[in-house]
Image 1 (cartoon, one colour):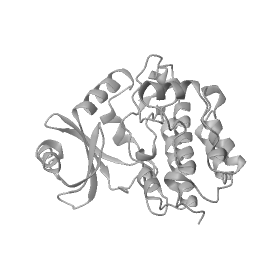
Image 2 (cartoon, rainbow, N blue to C red; image 1 turned 90 degrees about the vertical axis):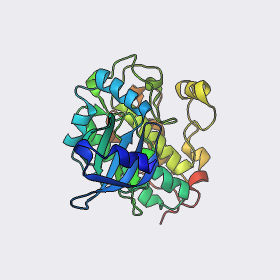
Image 3 (tube, rainbow, N blue to C red; image 1 turned 60 degrees about the vertical axis):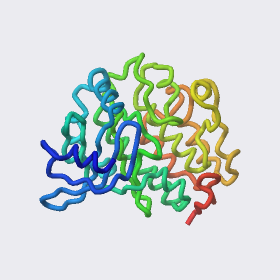
Image 4 (cartoon, rainbow, N blue to C red; image 1 turned 180 degrees about the horizontal axis):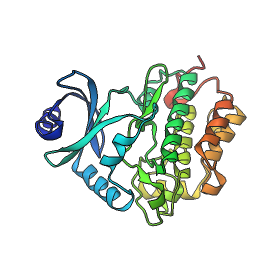
Length: 292
């Protein structure tokens, strides 16, 4: 895989970057750590797969006012990964990004080594990244623990922007593509969407962070999608009895079935989330997290 990426980077606008090691493989892309050859500046190099190329072509055509390759370099926020430049290498889409933590929130949750206070800080910072994107008129549509890079201290950046859409073009009948378990009911139903689908996804991240499982952990395929549409998730405080009532209320409001019943803006959710008490511990997937 690494040799293939090196071959792709062998010509054109991206010939000055060296890919050193693959750190993340996704259905739609591969991310490698690397460096700029001339300055040795560390970078991340994202190369899209064939399937990822097809998705991006469709999103550019139907759901963005301009191509993602033009949008990404314009973004500038401390909680959103900075794209240095974009281009193509032997026909494939390539994005060169600033060096960022290469460990995702999902990996830290699996490793059970992120304190609860650091966990909350990471979620708050990811939420601020969403606020920035929403202020520019975009819907992220792909928030999940694996879309958030995090340092050992809990400092976070949104690193996956591949499903970014123009909020004015997210009409009914849109795409269902998204990370499994973090796609809001209205997305599954192909209804018109807005930034509140990101609030649902962030709520799902919070739920898993403090309970150790996704809001709808059982079921596969169509059955799982029906549960998201028709069922309510079990309250956090029932899965983890150390979850305070105010934290439970914040997350459950974010996960309401109907967008009009959720928070209207991410900042409203973050205000309540920041004020909510933390649990003494988390459970299951995150069993070793403490309140330290």
